[in-house]
Amino acid sequence: MTTCIVCAGQEVAVSLDLGKTSLANKFLSQEELSREEPIFPLRIGFCRSCGHVQLMEHVPPTAMFDEYLYISSMSDTLRDHLHGLATYVVKQFNLSARDLVVDIGSNDGTLLSGFLRHGVRTLGVDPAANLARLAAEKGVNTHVGYFGATTARNLRDQHGDASVITSTNSFPHIPDLDDFMKGVDILLKPDGRLVIEAHYLMDLIEQNAFDTIYHEHVSYWALTPMSRLFERHGFEIVDVERLPIHHGQVRVTAARRGAHEVAAGVGLGIREEQTYGLGRFETYTRFADNASQLRLELIELLDRLASSGARVAGYGAPAKGNTLLTFLGLDVRRIMYIADRSPLKQNRYTPGTHIPVVAPDRILTDQPDYVLLLAWNFAEEIMRQLADYRLRGGRFIIPVPQVSIV
Image 1 (tube, one colour):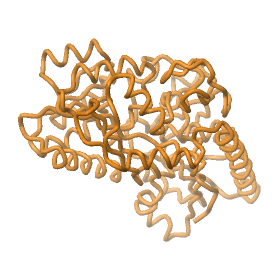
Image 2 (cartoon, one colour):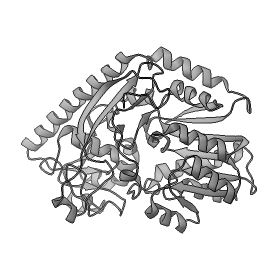
Image 3 (cartoon, one colour):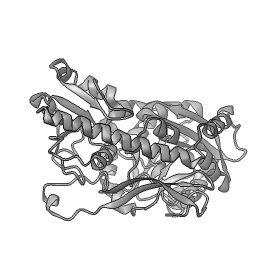
């Protein structure tokens, strides 16, 4: 994709190449281990016209999202954050039982269940039928499918206009941004708001979080190119807030141009990006160099531990963990197994590296010498959950933003 998906510029230059990897959320069953596993190039590029950072090769969304194994409610931290977002939106925009909130990429309905507590009407949109069934258990109705102009017309006809459209951690997944924005324009009330939460490019670079790069994440967002996208569709950013969740995200509120007052923080945020250098290609080549250096440090540490006879397990099987495992070339010779709370991932194997995924109680039963925190963005939560392991002398390896042992 040498054409920018934001501005259609033709100068998208490769800035980081992570090699070829399997799809990060396609955990394998025992039977699937014997089959050929598809792999795809994983590279990001920088648009010299608008500054957008995007994947250079796209995988069809149906290959990644029709069945999905990531569940939002598996993290206590994330669940609490999403319920807090629901409360914030209801109070900030004075929503009532007459209002409809539509969540794009609604997963298992964790966010929308927070809105239901406030008596607001809700509707989820998600292509994964297995997650829609989990959402239904929470009382959340989900339209199973992909969001765009056609879907928006159908939903508007069935449910009416939306007062708020949310997209948390799914906006980076969208390859056809123009169709998405057309859908927002169709479904949203004239004075409605679009609320987006996504990983923030400045935080990603500051923390050397190269493992956030995988095929589901088509875009790596900053305010400047996002503003350009919105302007082309008659929208504008009216508020922005940086968040600590996932070690760095941004919450953007957008609306039709002129519908609401623009907060001063929007201009300040864009100027901060310019000062930081998000519009310069050299920023991303340095990021690539830092990723390579971290890779060397982690391999050296794990090799040293293996030589000493130390036993190492992993904790957390997020998609980002599979980028890390593949980039480092790790397998069961270095990581015995990976513990994860999600029952959808347990008794499966990591894509590409084929490390078994087990239930968390295996850590306490087995007491490995070290646990590599692949879900390092939830390190504090995980270490609280494994307090007994730590009291017995177990230690944690935190791989990002810098290699450390605690």
